[in-house]
Length: 433
Ligand code: HAX
Image (spheres, rainbow, N blue to C red):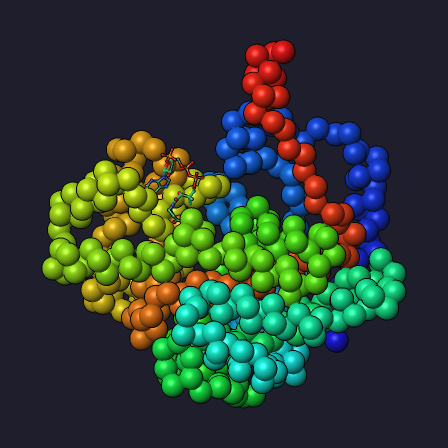
């Protein structure tokens, strides 16, 4: 298998590099930590390692060193498509090199061979669907697959530590292969006939999702490819990536770990912001009778802020510029449906809200994040049930977190266990006592 061979070839040199760094320089100081950071959600404390992606506050994400426009331009694409194979992106995340067409297709083929979802998953989801939010269904579906974990089986059979990454890669491929079908089923069982979808072996991973969710046409296939690529990875400190990494650090398998990560993604300050954002746009559109004037929108934004609520899709814990993932989706919408009312409203919000947030002076970053526009694209192509949107985010996020966990196992990253202090200790420390 191509990923296995490529990783096997790289891992010994990486292990030697990490060993040299940690043995010879374990006392080197990375940064100082302040009371504000300890009591402030650990913001910007540099205490995690990922070579898969990095978020520069002034530039945005790079995946394996490539900016979003470079990733979109350079990854191999299906013939006639505007957006690349997601299989190529997964190769890039795992291997760290831009794949050839053949290498991207090899990952797509691996996924096809592993895509069958056991019937009991559909049966179980069908029972709980009427009461459950789509994110609960998604998290439970991933957890229900846990009994198939190769890592857990091999661990209990007695596996050497330097082999841990092998079943982790197998589990990661088995899990990610099934996600388009699981997500499409969640959509169908919540909002359509409830039919079990079947992937078409002629289509790539993302195009299969598009078809199974019931949207025809090349444009939505491209939206799906773009969406999953953009949501894949955003370094290791965000809630979904960090939770997955943390849980996996106890040697839980990827099913336990990613299910936990999805539960973090389901919070409104993280992934759920994408459904909140579209809801907000629709509410503005309804209350102001269409696309408003700049002045009407300014007033609406102020009234909203004065009622103590946040503007979903704006602000970021790390970024200090408009998110390039936002920009890529805005450009797609501008090119393909410039006259769509919700797109025009989202573009106006981009023009007005940062200015208002700056005047308010609270948010450190008044610019849009990935969630400010993603729902606009889904809504345009007919996926309008916005409480489904965070599931889409989760399908993409699986690619990044699984790649990170495979590498964490390969490099023997240990159990995560930071230290907590009491408030009294911090007070004494602040007093110099
Ligand atoms: N609207 C109004 N106020 C905002 C704001 C926004 N969009 N963004 C930040 N603020 C406020 C904060 O609520 C905070 O207020 P208090 O001091 O009263 O608590 C203040 O500005 C400082 O916050 P910050 O330091 O700029 O931001 P944080 O690092 O604490 O939080 C968040 C980052 C993304 C959670 C924040 O900007 C926010 O709530 N945004 C809206 C929700 C959102 O879009 N979330 C998705 C983020 C991207 C992501 O993870 N996607 O999955």
